[in-house]
Amino acid sequence: MHLPITLLTALPLWLPAINAYTPLSESFLRAIPSPGNAFDIDQASNGSLLAPLLIPRVPGTPGQKAAQAHLYNYFQTALPLWNVTWQNSTSTTPATGTQQIPFANLIVRREPPWAQPGGTNFLTLVAHYDSKRAPEGFIGATDSAAPCAMLMWAAAVLDKYLTQMYTEMSALGEGGDDLAMDMGIQLLFLDGEEAFMHWTDTDSLYGARSLATQWTMSPNPRPHHKFYKYRTPLQQISLFVLLDLLGAKEPRVPSYMPTTHWAYKALAGVEKRLRGFNLLESSSSSKRDGGETLAFLPDGESDTARARTARISDDHLPFIHKGVETLHLIPSPFPDVWHTSNDDGEHLDLATVRDWAKIVVGFVGEWLDLMEVWTEPEGEGQGQEEATSGNDKETMEKESTEGGKASFAERRRSFLTSSFPP
Ligand SMILES: *[C@@H]1O[C@H](CO)[C@@H](O)[C@H](O)[C@H]1NC(C)=O
Ligand SMILES: *[C@@H]1O[C@H](CO)[C@@H](O)[C@H](O)[C@H]1NC(C)=O
Ligand SMILES: *[C@@H]1O[C@H](CO)[C@@H](O)[C@H](O)[C@H]1NC(C)=O
Ligand SMILES: [Zn+2]
Image (cartoon, rainbow, N blue to C red):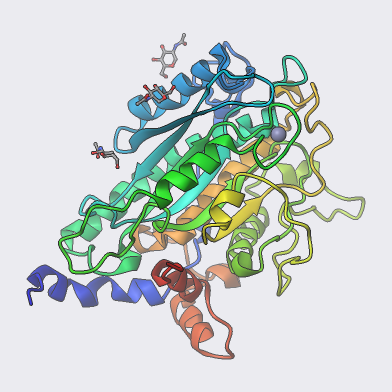
């Protein structure tokens, strides 16, 4: 038996971070930058991540190629530490006869520098970049250009924290030993979500079905350890977070999944704290008569998901069917503009788009336990509101062992270490 010495010595150093977990502090939440012009809808706007996607993006058309180029070039130039790969397939569709239509999923990953091939677990953020074939000229701003742009922006904000986290862990000789240490982020920009004619099991989810199947059938390279952590890329998905139909004003995204309701609550908690610190723009514009702000994520205080809500068919289905745990961020009801010509840039509520992007960054930050690498500014971080007080770690640890109420950290950990059905 051979156990590398670095693993043995590394153990105690980072371990406390795994069982403990610190909610993002006020100063951290305040430091999440404003998206600025990232979501400008004007094609002439310099630096907009969204505007180039506000075109018809039907698979097999030039718009699809333009959207692909925008996504690909962005990561190549702005985020060189992220690994960008395509997963391609072709299929006939009921609308296009015998012609093979190309579908290309873009997979974008940031993983620890010490990661062995197939050794990283990925918090996986997903949106589809194709648009619907009809009505003619359909843009699909909420469906799902805006969610794609949110993920692009979130990656850029998270990039520096990931660098810091990986650098500090590397310096301490940590990583590679514990599952929770090998956390990465994966973005999936899926193609062919929309039906070409009428939604059926075979006329929809072209990209997602192809990717889920391919990942099931592609074993990871044999590790030099005696065991596989994750036998396939599918198993490397710790949680599949799907964003869809986001960008219209006053969205209500209920909790759909009983098994990931704990993660929904964490997300809702981030929204609540951001609002509490007045860091969300929509809070001022969406107040009820009584002055109460409507939450995007209204089920955060609920103990259970709305398990009886019918499952909405979407890109997560092929993954759910293969045992992947998912969190579905789609409003109910759908936006009024859904699948109409009005789902365009002009009908987006940009304050809502920017708020979603910040909420996503906060959620990922908590998932990665970024407070471990966050330095409170001098003179701050003391005596703030409950949720961010100094003894969070102890509190969370207690919660995790008392009263049978598992903490976020414990639930996350069990997700990272759970094995999938064979
Ligand atoms: C767009 O922004 C980039 C980077 O900020 C800058 O270098 C470039 O000159 C700008 N282009 C235009 C046309 O304003
Ligand atoms: C990117 O990922 C692919 C597929 O996992 C791998 O073959 C390639 O070596 C990676 N590239 C870099 C630069 O890490
Ligand atoms: C996959 O599709 C992308 C996007 O269209 C393209 O750039 C790439 O060359 C394709 N890769 C292969 C191996 O065909
Ligand atoms: Zn759609």
